[in-house]
Image (cartoon, rainbow, N blue to C red):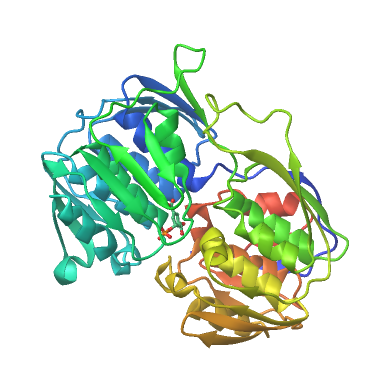
Length: 447
Ligand code: S3P
């Protein structure tokens, strides 16, 4: 696979955009496929993970045209219109694809088998399989239903009341999607504020989703109507991904003299924990509101803003509780920032990081240590001692797109050459990352 070469860089400057939000792109495609009528999706993330969802939904009988790289025209089949796939559904490396689809498939009167890459086949699935069984589906998997491949024999589901043992938007979404097909009411209690894109998008499709604090309630059997606004054709515009914006923004924070703006970013508060963390560390990160913010009926029902970061000295902080949930995907890049902060940063309550694309506590600590970072691994987090003078090294991304990008940003403030091995995984979420960073003045190239 391809390697990235990164060198210490001068000030990063400019305004860039980053690709569409990954979570919202999966949901826009899945809900449009289940809707009555056609939906045009623009700003869709044409990255590996979302392509996996596109492949699977086509295999389930939904017709999807792709008039442009980031534009889809989805011909909805209606709530009961999916058909049995002729072959195993390949979810690639995408946990969101597998877990959200498991929820939809639990409600279908046919058999589906879901598999994926070796990395995905190591990720825990009991968290979706077990509650879906409680709703009436048959879900089998390796190791007693805990690991993929998963075989889902769907059928008549009944709504239920369920308290999520971990704050997970993928599990919450799987159960809400299953709840669409269930008889009666599905009620979910969340232990923390996991991203709420599914709830927002279900509303955009006209569904009555009731949210009361940490409880979400949905009555099954409601049809999804494509979000038309004033137009004949339904339209969803996917905003830019905050989790991708985090890389140029933290790079700007760390590289002296930098000033970088990222346009049109989804600033849903369930996603922006990193901004709160950085504010607590003294960073200069500003959220600029937008006059052209899309109206709820033609956007994705999400708040959008431009984000501006300027280079700044950071001080250490402590992270735990709900803030971990609201920044769950940002820990690889946050750890890089913490290596440059004055003092010891403590991350706790973050055991979930161990079951992401890779073990994001072990792998981040191991790879940044090769560059001179001082990080003590803890069972549920880490202690990051800063500031550390980083030096270039040959580092590995453990098949993890966000670790690859975080290591590349670390290379921008390191002495000598940093080589990020297997960096092609970046395409799982941020195609164009290298070109975006180059446009800002970063010394980063494919080998
Ligand atoms: C996602 C939810 C989160 C997140 C993942 C995307 C989603 O996973 O880490 O990148 O789109 O629902 P968990 O549900 O496992 O926390």
